[in-house]
Length: 82
Image 1 (cartoon, rainbow, N blue to C red):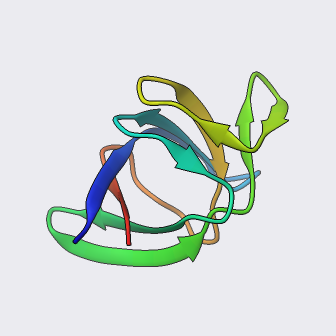
Image 2: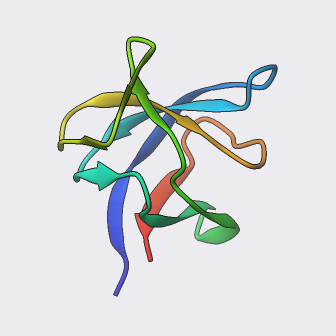
Image 3: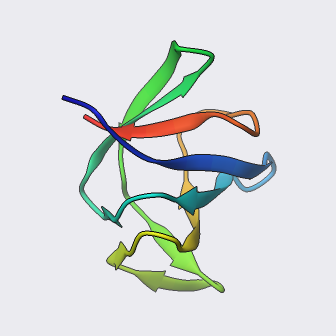
């Protein structure tokens, strides 16, 4: 069962960071999948979460965080825990 974690609000291609609005909690070590229009883009394990340039281990529902991503993602891409 996949659980929606959030949606990409912005992507910084030079540093490979997606800004994500969370709809569920997320922690370092969680495996996530990025999807756009129902199509799977890629999966990765969360290696780094930041809020205001501070590294954190987990973030709560409703937060806006920066996630280091392995590939480029578009705004509006949905993120699911797998």
